[in-house]
Length: 357
Picture (cartoon, rainbow, N blue to C red):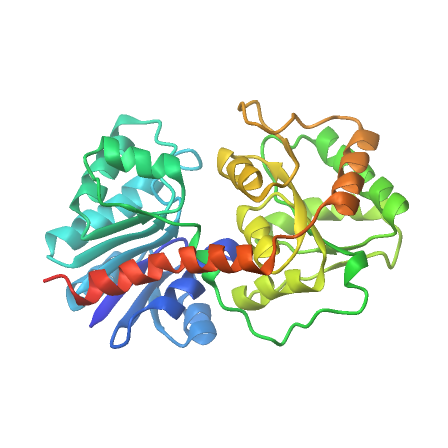
């Protein structure tokens, strides 16, 4: 059975690559994946699967016509906050797959925000027409129910269940190592970046921490980091650009604490045994922080349960120092529970691709 996998793949984003890696690990036996990718050569080499250019209309159409299934592979694909065209692209492919009679699965989805009427119409039409649907947060489940889809599965983000290799071991100085996963965003003005840099320098002075910067999308995340580094002591930090998502997740195993702005950075940190501090640019990050019991700052004007970002570097550093010294990682039992529940996305996938007529 050939199944087309559709997501933000091959675009250099570690979180989306982690979703693809998880999806490939959970495909049932007998399924041959065809991945729509922004970099098909890289996708083929990394995962050993067939991949076609995601924006080559003829190649995508041929893939759909040759397949028996179609999967939206995780993340917030149906949202128009970052681009008004995202719902048109992903929704158009889903409707085409449904029109061709393929089994269609919306897998590990986060729905919205949907600010435009066309986006809402497309999303409602697509989700209602799917063979099976799973979502990663309760607001998405509630939206499905408002659209009349009462059988959606709610489970933690699939990346909780991503299996990582044992190649990355816990170092002897793990208690000093702090993972940092930042990203550019409109809420981070140059003044705020400067405050973050000074906060990191003060945090290091108070804790003697060794910072491990893990850019999830190096092309976007690395440039603003360069502005922060001159404030830090030489030899007190490193930058690890790891394109393999399983190894990227495993890097958090080398650290005891994480300062995470990236959603999948926070998930990887918690799953690999770190405690942490969230910098929320999106309600999904704030919701995860509350679920994990992490402290954090809200970088936006959106009302969440997290306190607003302070502009004072001393206050930033003190909050990180307190969290570093006082926080505790999730127990192995709780981490296992997250992984098991996240695995339900894979169970639903297997059922949808093998049992439905």
